[in-house]
Image (cartoon, rainbow, N blue to C red; front, side, top):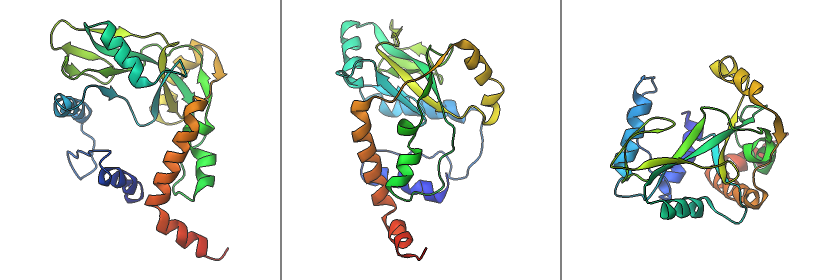
Length: 229
């Protein structure tokens, strides 16, 4: 992570909203590091969090009912089905047609680049073999990136229909190995359609992101505003 972006993470840590765990301060690729991080997350949260969302930063889980929150959906399923240890959400891919900006220059940057606001070309059907889970850490022993491998007892996983909830995964179809391996399969799997991020959530999300970035980069914004054109 570059120093400029790191300032946002550090701000979340300072407000107590995020706990950042670093296995090493030196950026390097280790084949098993992803798996190690997942297991570490489960162990740290087993007696701390009721549920864990196993999801990436470029993904957003949404419900199909505007009157239902993600929390209420999970609680209702877990309450109705005491044998459920994890809930699986199918993925819809949302195409990114531009890369994130290098710097934040105020509201205009968000209007032009905030993924949930700008990108909405979405796969209509679920992407086979692509899904993410929400789990109860007291009921799960071992997890891979997309699924539970071992439960702590006689618990099961439950797939929910996309009408109830799904993952919006924002991906650039022309970037890296994704463009040659996964994306052609997705293109052949079905129709794309304009499916926007839930409107009842967009306003609050925009305000939250803008408030955070304005605070983190306020000194930069002041300097930029005082410089001559």
